[in-house]
Length: 114
Image (cartoon, rainbow, N blue to C red; front, side, top):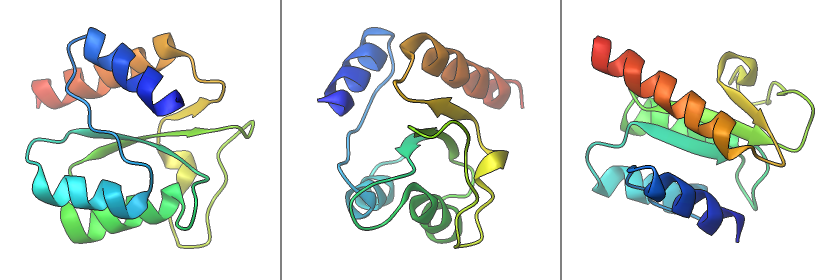
C-alpha cells in the first residue's frame, strides 16, 4: 500500500515509477529498463536488505544510479556488507512526500547540470 501511494504521488509529479516488492525484483527492473536515475529503497525488506540492493546495483548493474534510503529508524545504520548507508540521502518513515520530492528534484538537477 505504501509503495502504491509513493508511486502515485511521484507519477502525479511527472516521474515515471517502477515498483518492486523486493531486491531481486528491483534488480530485474534495472537490468531490463533503461534510463533509471534514482532508486528509493527501504533498509529493511524481506530477505535481502536495502544495503544489499545498493551493492548489487552499484557493482553489477549501473553505478550512476542514485539512491534515497528510507527507514523507520531515527538515523541510517552502517550495514555489514560494506555499504556506508550514511553517505546516501536518508528519509525517516513515516515518509514525507514533500521531503522525497525535494531529494529527487535535487538529484535530477545535479545530474542535468553535469
